[in-house]
Amino acid sequence: MATKDSLDKIKEAVQNTEQIEKALDGFLCPMQMFLELNREKWNTDAVKMLAHDLNAKRIFITKVSLNYLEGIDDVLKEIMQVK
Image 1: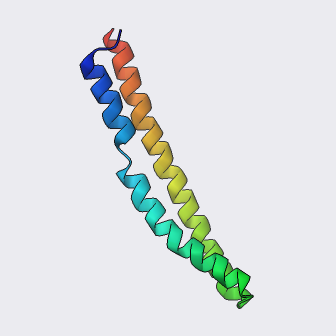
Image 2: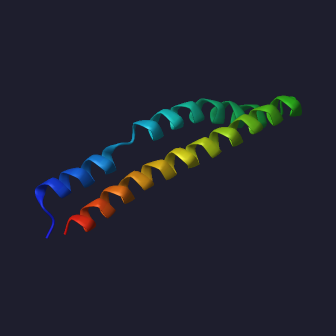
């Protein structure tokens, strides 16, 4: 049975989303710009540059998400070793 301390650690790890939130904030504005430029048939070079920027941000968001999940995994492993 999980102790209150273990549950608190899990809760803290799951709620630690600050890095992901910041990464998403940086991603949403360029995504809106990309969709707008694409819809308005803007210069293909501008769209390509923005697409490249979005791809780099997508990779960063993936890495941040993996760090988040690894943090949760570490807490769960720590709790399982304590027993």
